[in-house]
Length: 88
Image (tube, rainbow, N blue to C red):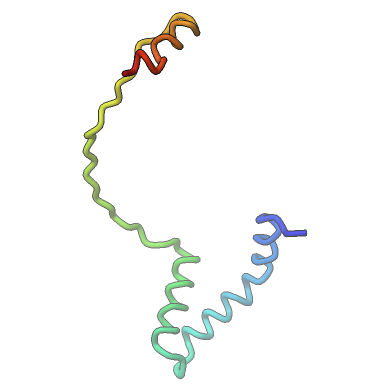
């Protein structure tokens, strides 16, 4: 039976101390490749302080207009307004 996300999260959190120690060891290892040291340092900073905020600029342009039909009083009126003959 598959584990639920909460179970998986709990299992993963049980390894927190060892994972942080491993990241710190890689970051501090003089013989580790620089990319590995930077990745470990970034991971530690992200977990300790949160990821750095990213600024996103966007321009939102509304170009589409929806044609909303009038409210129908009855089901029959709606069916008549939306019948294939009426829509043509």
